[in-house]
Image 1 (tube, rainbow, N blue to C red):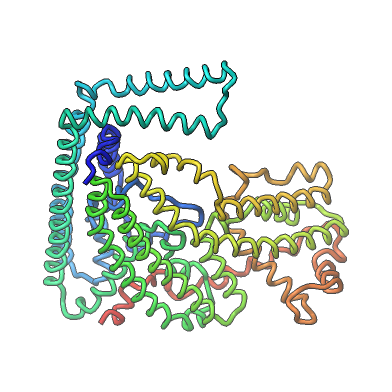
Image 2 (cartoon, rainbow, N blue to C red; image 1 turned 90 degrees about the vertical axis):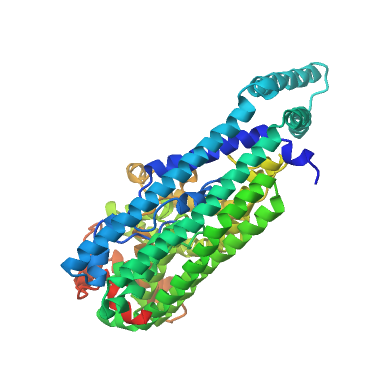
Length: 578
């Protein structure tokens, strides 16, 4: 093996290694593993929908997760309710939970302390003095020297282009990396660092074995306290625990979605819930299987990924991350498949549309969250006194906007799914590349080099949507008085991509309702006469009066679902577990 490549940026390895350990331990110091304080509390499936990078560089997030307990004493109310524990069992199971959590915490704290000590040792190896001790000052001096060279060339009429300047910087810094590489080799710092990382790997692998044993002991002791009837309830409750603990760990848009939570929030008719019952049983089993397979690989692959970082093995790191993402995609695919199946099973069109939109908003909220344009039209129609002519024009404009927005949102989802996994692998391998001394991919934070400023289909499509939205809002403004224009909402954040508001489902439902109500010829579109009928319905005969638009409020009447709010596939679904 060529020894020069792994040690080219050994000082950066030391700095990032110490930062890695601090990141893991710092997060755990403030992180809570509680996902519910009562039996009624349910963890949401999470949010997604924009370009998402790894939550922590080079497998750090996975390592944080394996240092956190799977269940805690705060989950005790769930055990009592879902397993129907009596008073005597409750005391014993609580003791088992406390013992598991305390033992886990003690072991985790030892691992964290050992990793922190090793991180400090690695840092001291490179920053504590000797030839490498003045690294920061040497980098500063070299940067000033390079800057002076560029300024001298400009003064002599040999100005460099932006790309030439970047290449000049790279070449000069590569020279310095070579110098420091030789010093690291001569001082033995590289061998020491590799030894420290190997110790870290040994600690993590031992902890994984200990972690599995702790859980197996807890489950075995718990099952020994349960009656035969309670043992029937345990598999479904365990699936619930896995689902609620594991779904929020998603990295891909749509991976975190919990369809049980969304179904519970829909307030469907009772007959609709009955139609979904069998499919929800199937979903419960399918999402559980996908999560178990995913989590097992994430658990066992974290040390593999860290080993690739240690060795600067970009190909091996890429292989591990791609496999991780395949398992993540399998979870997302289960959610996507059952979303479509559940929509198809519903017979009430309004419920179909509302449920589909709710799932899409949960999975891709940066795409399907209520946009600035939607908020602008809503403000004009609901909060302003419009003349009959203006009302007709605004309604027509809004319908055209919503139709174009729906098409562009669907395109955005396809582009995001095509690029999201690749982007995450790229950001992860960039970290490993730096460890191997290859800066051509850029630093592992703040984006890559020129490639990140190149083509990005999702970003370009989002920019096009923003431009389309801007155009429609400008048309809307042209229909309003200066005073009314001032009442329109301001654009939020960079690019005005909008927030997570709940108006999306209502806007789409309103669009479908208008088309269905006024589409006399049944072609799925509104012609001129049909648009006129729509206008007459909304504005004719009442001038500027804004009453009569609150018909959607009667949805509250469907809230009585006979206690179905705690469905979630927990105790009542025990029979599915066998």
